[in-house]
Amino acid sequence: FFYFHALMGLAASVFEPKPEKAKLGVRVVCVSDTHGKHSSLKVPEGDILIHAGDFTHFGKEDDARRFNKWLGSLPHKHKFVVNGNHEKNAPWQKKVALTTYKYQTHTHHIHPVC
Image 1 (cartoon, rainbow, N blue to C red):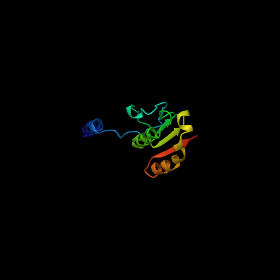
Image 2 (tube, helix red, strand yellow; image 1 turned 90 degrees about the horizontal axis):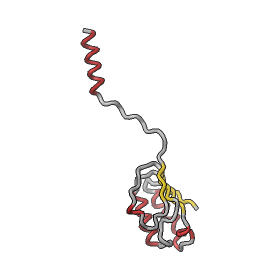
Image 3 (cartoon, one colour; image 1 turned 180 degrees about the vertical axis):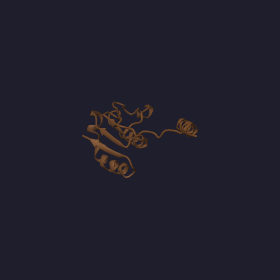
Image 4 (cartoon, rainbow, N blue to C red; image 1 turned 135 degrees about the vertical axis):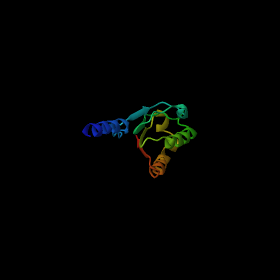
C-alpha cells in the first residue's frame, strides 16, 4: 500500500507543470542615432528603453512626430529619451511636455532627459 502511494505521488509530480519563477532583475534596452529610421529597428523586449539621442534627421518635426508614435507603440514600461544635437535646437522642443503628458496617461512613462 505504501509503495503504491509513493509511486503515484512520484508519477503526479513528474507530470504536473512546475510554477514559473518570478523574473529577477531589470532589462534595459538602449538605442541611439536612429535619425528618423526608428521604425526599421527590431527593438528587444525590456523593462526600460533608453533612446540616447538623434532620433530625427536634422531636427525635422515630421521625424519627431513619427518617432513619438513609434515610441508609444513599444511595450517598455519606462522610456527615457535624450535629445541629441539634432533635436536640441529644433523649434518643436516646447511641445515635448505636452507629448510626455499624453503618453503618461496611457500606461507608458516617458521621461525626457535634457
